[in-house]
Amino acid sequence: MENEKKQTLNDIIMEFVEIEQILIENGGELTNEVEDRLDQNAFDLDTKLDRYEGFIRYLKGQAEYLKKQEQYFNSKRKTAENTIIKMRERIMFAMIAVGKEKVKTMSHSFSTRETESWSINEVEFKPEDKLKLQELGFMSEPKPLISELKKHYKDNEVLPSYINVTKKKGLTVR
Image 1 (tube, rainbow, N blue to C red):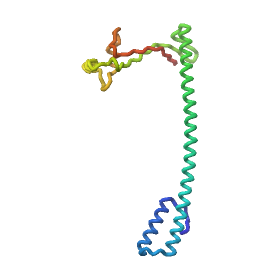
Image 2 (image 1 turned 45 degrees about the horizontal axis):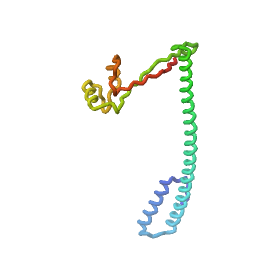
Image 3 (image 1 turned 45 degrees about the vertical axis):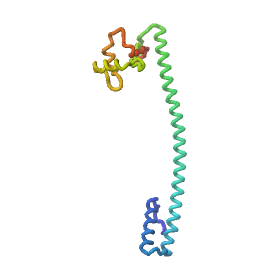
Image 4 (image 1 turned 180 degrees about the vertical axis):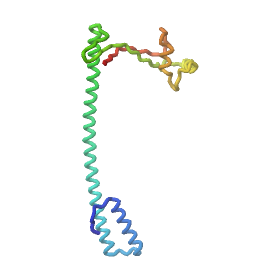
């Protein structure tokens, strides 16, 4: 069978199915026409498989190249992010060093502020503490609702031992 158009892998498989059907209908008789079709289809299959593998190898090379590019750009992104953090720390340090909490320039307004981060000390958090917080409605299994604890204890000078409050300086730029 001469190929007038390019065959897909499915076309080649279907040709084998058609040849099989002819053999079944002919009681297994292998005629010259059937042999020619088998030879041509086997050649088409070999050619198609070689092309598939060639393309697979090309794609593997592309994937490896893209992986290296991804690593390169991830490294660049991390460098940019770290530089931003360091530069903001320097701005904040300069403002603290000169004793200014707010600075207004032609382009931006800078201000420092103290922020608090609340967390639960799992070692200090006892079952009886959990029961008390459940009674107050401050539990969302399996952990306490930090926002509710902040509201409840915000004016208290003494906090339960299982609450950690970390304070740090932050910078706001507008």
